[in-house]
Image (cartoon, rainbow, N blue to C red; front, side, top):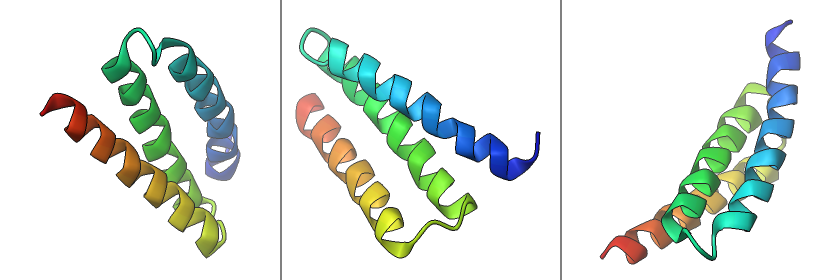
Amino acid sequence: MNKTKLFENFGYVVLMGLIIAQCVIGKWYLVGQGIYLTCNIISVVRSFVLNRPKADKIKDLSCTAITIGLILIAIK
């Protein structure tokens, strides 16, 4: 499998992670946020590897920053 196809398939990993995070966020907030953070980081890397448009890169970086902020607020 070539690198491009591998990173295209990571989109399915992100989708699965987002569904799982949505299911656990109410009961295990930090676990859910950790899953969101992992998915956001995968999305950022994927956007750069696949040379996605600038808007996609900004969206993924913004979502990652928001998730980091929510985690920091929760642990303070």
